Image 1 (cartoon, rainbow, N blue to C red):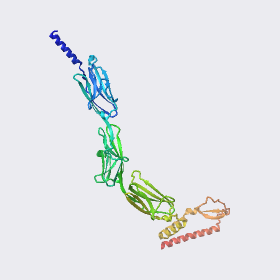
Image 2 (tube, rainbow, N blue to C red):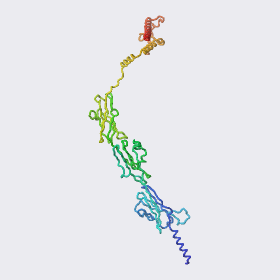
Image 3 (cartoon, rainbow, N blue to C red):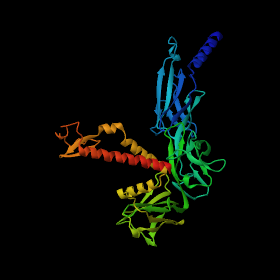
Image 4 (tube, rainbow, N blue to C red):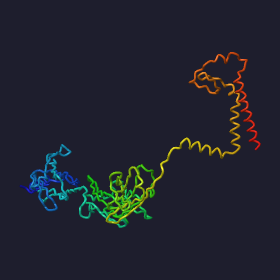
Length: 447
């Protein structure tokens, strides 16, 4: 063999070695998945040939697979190999690509880290791909307030809520019923604050707690991974009782129902009693005691004593008392009788009219007489005067009774030209009355 032939052979063998060497098509990259889900790491190799692909966990150097055979005993790990032609189909078989995929199912937090795709070449070829496991928020028992926190009114209170998760969860606070939280303002009054979640974080600081801040608070932790979680913390504010009555004097007629109201504020809850002359009043008979709590403010209680059919013996002073471990408070009210209103009788109205007429001025009396005289002397009334016979008895009237039948008197129309003696007498009496009225009017005018 000549020297030239040897050189050509060496070049050919070296060319074969270069051509047969596998290579990675692209980086594996990083994969992010939520806990409990599946993460897949792809490793694509060109000209794999008879070489084998292995997967190794970098953190503890654990071999997971060799070729298509899984080495680890965990069923959560699986390796698949897929062959695929290159984009240029005209290339030779040596240009074909194969993809080895590492499947990690039912992800755990411990699976977070980097994994190596390795080829058994000389020298060895490898590349890394990392897995990030997202964890939904969780509220920890350590560093979190118990389900109930008790403080005295006027003291400071701190509600804590420690949460974990990936990414780090955001913690916010809400009032269970109203949504907003009462906080101290710049000038110390309590004001509703709708943006406490931006200020509080894992701790909710309440300065000089007021009874109106008592209630349930929700600590809510959330991040990019659902679902959000919450914890309920109940804040109890202890203070001594107070009692007051809306009306200290209560009046009612006898034989009616009466309600005595007492408003009590206290926490813890109080023992409420109604007493009279140092005797405790119990429900039963004509007495009924009813206690009602406030739906939104549990420290408020309304105690009502109902007395049915009020009697003389029920009149007097009543005491409402409220007692608890924080102290005692009392409030008193008095019940007295008022007379029942009675409708006025006809005699009373007549007497009142007489007394009112006596006080009238002379001018009013003259005006009244003048009006009467004008009515008596009205021509229309004179013309409307008719003679009606009721049961054969004649009378003179200006208003016809529709119930009375008309009875014609033949003697009345027998001679119209001859005046009746009785009619003449009546006319004389009527004219005398008119003259008397005119004289009386003239006399009163002169006075």
